[in-house]
Length: 62
Image 1 (tube, rainbow, N blue to C red):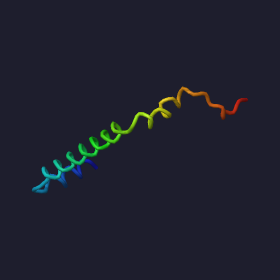
Image 2: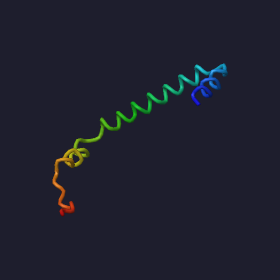
Image 3: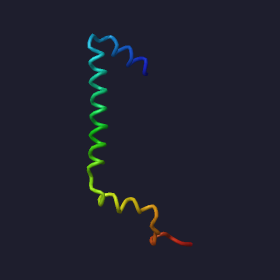
Image 4: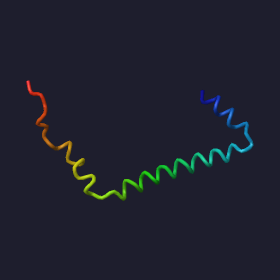
């Protein structure tokens, strides 16, 4: 399957441009996600960071 894509994309004259655009889109998405997580206030994460440590009262006990 990978061989098919490799051969079909290497036949184009502008295949290097497609690879560069794909890499730039990936990097922009990754940096955008990182920026959104970094800019959220700490209060947004305070409840979630303590969830694994809290006791579950809704647990079924046998």
